[in-house]
Image (tube, rainbow, N blue to C red; front, top):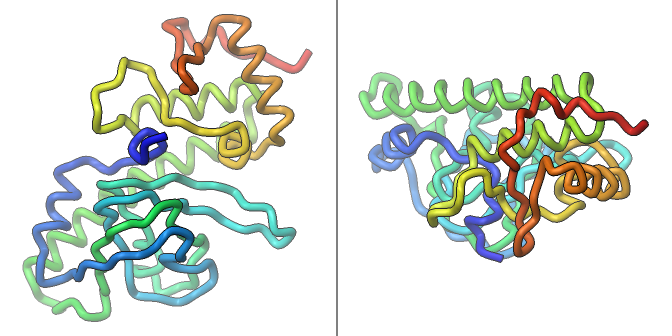
Amino acid sequence: MSLESRRTWAAPEELIATLRAARHLHRKLRIGQDDYLYHQGELSTRFYLIESGLIKVGIFREDGVEIILEFMGAGTVCGEGSALDCLPRFSSAVAVEAAEVLEFDTAQWPADGAESALVLMALLRITAIKQRVLAQRLEQLFSREPEGRILDLFQRLARTAPGVDAVPAGVLPQLTHDHIAAMTGMTRVTVTRSLNRLRSRGFIIQEEGRFRLASLPIETCLLSDN
């Protein structure tokens, strides 16, 4: 399973290029597999642009259950929220595979620097995109049945997480049933049953371990457990 085939989110390339170009504002870091880039609850003025590898970003509830937000690969940004609002981090980021990142420290930026202004504008746009995705996920948690939640997730991934290699339209990142459960707020058993129903009704296709959306009107997919 390639790293890029598991990436679930990517920022527009022009915004990533703006961050990379600000060479005076970042330094390159390498982190090993299973090492944490940052921990939930810590205070930090740093955020990261991932250049290679795969980073899992998730929230741990008080009962220890993990909610996976995204699998972030090359061309993604994480940790920017706390770096800008100076509040404790609401999520953790751990390397699924060894990764190379660019670390930015907002505390070290020149207040009136042109590079700082360009990076801040890029971050604002990236944050707005993330906010929209989180709003959509919150809506589906409260308004959709299990099959609808999965289809919402798959539609979003098909739009925002293309692999770097040319893959057929509608082919999704490689996610396990456990990953899908952690990204939709359901149990693994419910996910497995829902995927089976979606396959049997022709809404999704599974080929070589990857799911693909069928070309059917999603509006007709308001399914239930009944």
